[in-house]
Image 1 (cartoon, one colour):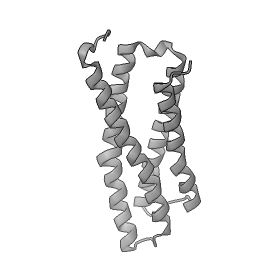
Image 2: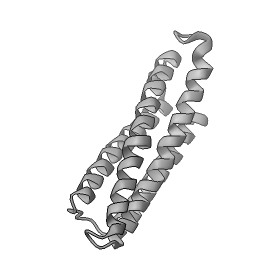
Image 3: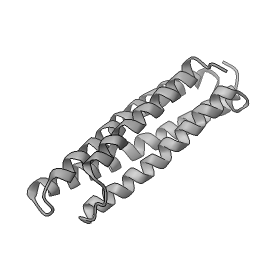
Image 4: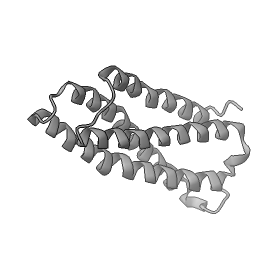
Length: 147
């Protein structure tokens, strides 16, 4: 494979795919935890358990996997010179939106931790679907490369 990665290209690609899987798995679970957390009475044992689960999921899985996905993805982008292709622009935009949503989820987690959630269960049900939609766009752009 051409580019600066040489034969390591496939290993970086595998690392990228694994990181994206972990990121998306956590991303599909965290808003669901928020839905259930909305139902828990503030200060209850259940609410405190959700706080621990949300913190560990975000800090232990979501944040590290996002960082690895970004690092490996940027290396692949440079290696493939993908920034010149239209499909990549759409994919990159969707990844940036996903990253902003990640930051918003981190904020929502901090709000729950401070017993200051301002959003409804319905809001988090909708937010639970957004990462999945972005994932569809990202995968289609990366695999099909329609333009």
